[in-house]
Picture 1 (tube, rainbow, N blue to C red):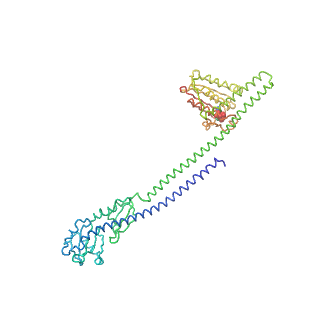
Picture 2 (cartoon, rainbow, N blue to C red):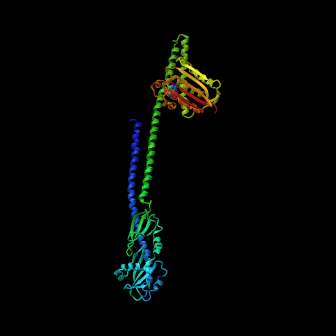
Picture 3 (cartoon, rainbow, N blue to C red):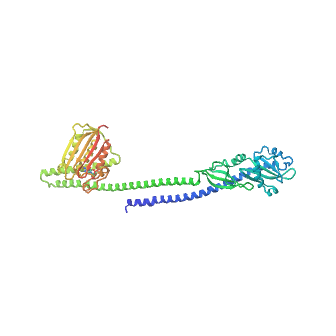
Length: 501
Ligand code: ADP
């Protein structure tokens, strides 16, 4: 298998396959990451909830300590009205009730009507244990917390103190202080025992529940819950990452594929160029050899004095001259071509009349044209302006076109050379009725070393640099060379050169 044919396989094995493996591995690990991120997120939320619950409990307890401390051992059963004065200035307490062991209300003197519901729920909740112990409890009554504790009165008897905690204070001082200022984008809420939010940091619509933690013992069965706001879920952010990853990978694969394709084309061009170059060397050597052997043969024949009549001798001399001209043309082409390739070709422009240029160029071909029986038609517009040219280069370009017309003419040996004004320049046209060039080759024939691959072309001498040179000369003059040709009908090359530079 040639290296060129192996290349796509190598590219597949060496580049595309690893890219696919990386893609698959990346995708799998992102998936795993997604689920572990979710688990981590929930765990963090749980920690966050229990920390918040503890903090809330701590703040409430501290406030309760202060309130109960003011009452303990100070409350007098005889004068319970002093309670309000004792509790004044404590933001926690919204209302206070005092009961004796028999359940009689000591304070306030007359219960407000709105308190009836709270008190009923409260007394139903107060257990025997609470009277006997000295602990405290909080009861959730509606959306309120009621702190209940048994203290000793000044008379030494137990007094049940119930303090309704101000829900606003609870909200602002405790919950806000605890829950706000967290860095996390999650929403924190406090839910009552039925799961209804008593307090939320932000609206909970479309938020996703993550984790919750109960308030500690001694509090009602309220919970601190952590929610995830819509659009911020770990899963969504991982999905976004997956998207970014997939798109990046896609772009990468496309870039790699483009690179592989480009390299493949480059490699193909290089291989083609190497082949063309080696053909070129073979063709040039062959081209050099043919005229040389003719010159040598005719020279030797003349030297040996074998040619007796004057006419034949003259013919031999002409052949030698013609072949050496062909040789110099070939060598000039190759040398100029190498100069052009290395950027050393220098053009010297001077106003040049076109008619002599055309005539001189064709004169150089007079012998082969006549010998092969070509019908030649030259048509130069008489009032052509002078054109700024490098005469040698332009002559050489024209000679290459004429040389090709001779070479690639078949049975119909006819050449027409015309020079006429065209736009802001002069068009030099060389037309033949030869084998012609297929349309798909028109662009390529001007490439260096390129020769049409058909057998009839290949049978003729040539190096493939002639038209490349013509194009270069045309462009150096600010002009262009174009071709119109059909297989079997002949070709028409036009070298257009601008008059004003
Ligand atoms: P070469 O040394 O092969 O003639 P050129 O660069 O002059 O190289 O021409 C490139 C190819 O273009 C030729 O090999 C030939 O196939 C084609 N070509 C050029 N001129 C003609 C023409 N007048 N008629 C037919 N084919 C032509």
